[in-house]
Each structure stands twice: as C-alpha cells, then as structure tokens.
Length: 148
Length: 68
Image (tube, rainbow over all chains, first blue to last red; front, side, top):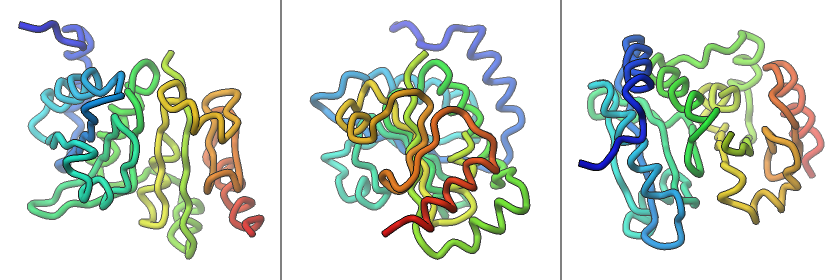
C-alpha cells in the first residue's frame, strides 16, 4: 500500500474541521500527462482530502483529454483545481481556482476554501459585497505564492 | 483566501492561487518579487503581501479606474 501524503494527525484534524461542512462541494482536478512535476502528488493530495468527508466530491480530468471541460472552467495550467458548490445536479462555479500544488501554507487555504464553498457565503463585509455585486467589468485576481 | 472570497460575490470575478515556482514564466511576467503577490487584471494593479479586505478592494477599484 502506498504511503499517504497526510499523516494520521493532520488527517484527523482536517476531518474534525470538516464537521463544519454544510453544502456539498465538488472539486475538479485537472492534470497533464507530461511536463507536470507535481501533478501526481497534487492528485493524491486532493484524493486524500476529499476522502475525509462525504460532502466532498472529486472529479479527475486531464487538461488535454478533457480540453473542452478545461476551457469551460478556464483552466490552462496543470495541476489545476476548481472548487464548485453542488446542489443536486446543479454546479455552482464561484470562480475559485488553484494552479500548482497547494502545499505548506496553501494547504490550509485549500481547507478553508472548501469550507467556504460549502457554506455558500463569502463572509465579506457588506461594503465589499455591494461593490463586487455592482461590478460590470471582469476582475481577474492571481495570487502568487510559494511553498513554505 | 481573501481573493477566493471575493470571487464568490460575482461571476465576473475569478481568483486563482498560483504556485510561483511551478509557473516561472508567468511569475516573471508579473515581476513577482515578494509573496504573496496579488495581481489584478494581468497587471492593471498589484498588491504585495497579505493585506486586509479594504486594502485589496481599494486596489481593485484603482486598477479598474486606471485600465486603458
């Protein structure tokens, strides 16, 4: 049996935090067969994480084989993660993306984001919500991070 | 992540966490020096460091106003 990426202690902590999950979440993982140093590890990581709760679902895709789906979600980098809310057969795309392996500090960002999507609410101030809701032009935020 | 929270409020907002060492060309294009760095609309605005909500909001407003 291959070793897990998450040790038992971390898995238990995450599983506990996942007690707060409300609505269902679907994660889409996009990998690539060549030229992707962290694809396998990212896939393994997200498999382990989503395995810790019945409310988390995971679809494994390939950026080339599933090019249409990748284009639909505007995924152009692998490994890529898309976090969506799932209500029955409906998918809610909140525009939340990860490019590259979410390790180190970004691992806790991933866990918090899963809970965020599950709660279906941004948690932002009314002023921020009002401004964002009134936007008429697109805003693309790219947050560059490094693994700690 | 704050940017991801903002993405939830409008389909026009998309927020992507990018692991810089895996995507060096993209990082270089955006002159990523300190992390985290939040780039807005491909360079119309940028914020270095982890900043509070109102700071990022102000920078987004500025980036949208400055856009050609």
